[in-house]
Length: 264
Image (cartoon, rainbow, N blue to C red):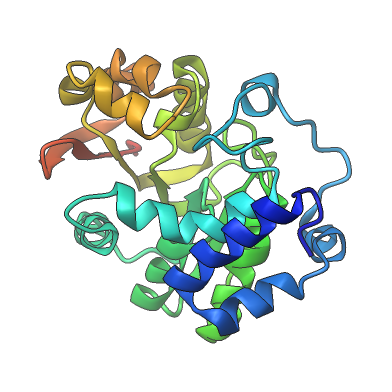
């Protein structure tokens, strides 16, 4: 149960959720004992960084460390991604140029992209990593409903504590606009370390060149780091870590898919 809301807030949330996802699913979410549900996904020694806990994402208190964020993410994201979320995510899948045996989805959220990857490569080991155990609860429920075996892990995208050369493919979707530039660059460095030689990194996020002139848009979606992200350059970040074969594909005016390879 979500217990940190007053009665008016709870009724409003229920009405919104019922309209978008239906009464049966809202009953399912209401039945969750969140403290028990997040326990299997929590890493005891995890330390939540200040950049993650000191801001509100999408205007929600405590950001993603909140069951409301996990429940509403799959409602908010399609509304905020034009022309459609699935179209963007399919564009990411089309960027894959290899047949990976081990895949990592960094900042996986509720696992939409992770599920797509598993369906595309059913024989591959697929791991979704996110810092929010609440998001991982929803991701795991979606995987079970789709009968997909995916490993879910709580952790920092910039410091995964996994072994060098663990993956053939790493994807990062709609994550960099939600963290400071220096953290995004650390995530790219971590991705380089985690990839096998000739492994591919794919990043789906906002088109920085366009977003820096659309300040009203970054304010509209109440993303605390979007304006900061827009001042950076993902391509330069990849070049700085010595990725090769870097390509950037602008999408739908405000998005971009950027890919690169770890050299031999």
